[in-house]
Length: 161
Image (tube, rainbow, N blue to C red):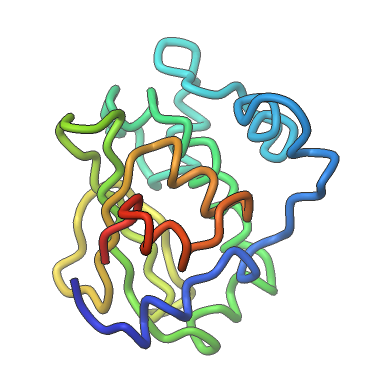
């Protein structure tokens, strides 16, 4: 839902790349190698990792259980770097992601704000968004990690905009 120009500006190239070596083997291993964090941390996620992803310790258990959570933490950390702080001026859009643990499950909503201030990544829907994506957890990880082309994901029905 929203602006197609905004949707096409959100690409894996915005964030530090994942090497081909990182993508060898299971996607969980690639995420762990990329972020340095255990995937699907649920009970094992520390409050400091919850703080990194959403800015507070009130991250839902459903969010922590997603494979996407580790990547969102990494994006959040990247947003604190000089390159990350420059993204809002470069991109200028607010994104909502509804990530479903599996098909038919209730989504966990995330905001990636690349428009306001220095940007932010948090759990929950934004007040105003420029583009809204919906996909299952596994496909979100593949798109963000560059393993699945966003246009192909859209054409295959794996990503709704």
